[in-house]
Length: 260
Image 1 (cartoon, rainbow, N blue to C red):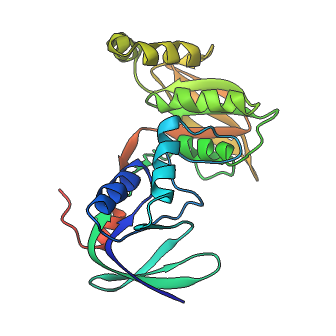
Image 2 (image 1 turned 135 degrees about the vertical axis):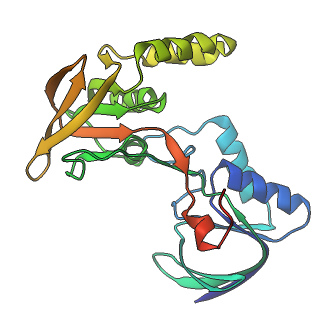
Image 3 (image 1 turned 120 degrees about the vertical axis):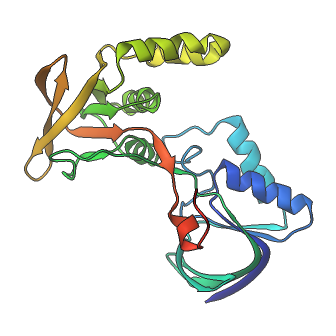
């Protein structure tokens, strides 16, 4: 069992957590970061056998690794709050407590999923969740994938599926075409993002559409979607759904933070 103490405990090793740790260390504070992922970076900078970290991510990771006043506990899961300023955590090999003077929550966001018949079938996952699995080495060869929901993350997931050897059957976007055009025209201020959008835009992109059912027995076999007032059923092996992100409020509630 480990018994640890620090000036500042940070929950979450994503971009915000790494930045907060470096800022605190510059003020001569002893910092501990607790994160349940195997490597720092959070969801946006998730590392793995099929991922390529951007230069900024590598810069932050190296800076934290070279800072003697920062200790990162990867693969550490928060279990309980032992007292007002002490938590219990566990890893695959050990467990321990951390006591702190100040606490910083950098727990990011989670995907918003809207339920429909069959949404709990094996093969159905969050869009970001599927992307994370692929970055960790999930093989997608010969896998037919439908990506559904709303927002630019769907295009990024489609690109990851293609790079991993999968086939994107369709992207099912809930927003109407007019809203998508307004979003696209607004990217003229960021030419790099506009070029990225052009490279990611798939051949089969269905706007103003929704998945209304997933079908299968032991695993996913097909999905039914509503498009232009009619229903279409598409065979597929995986369905990734994501309707944007919502703040991950559970850690704040765990520590009795005021939520507004």
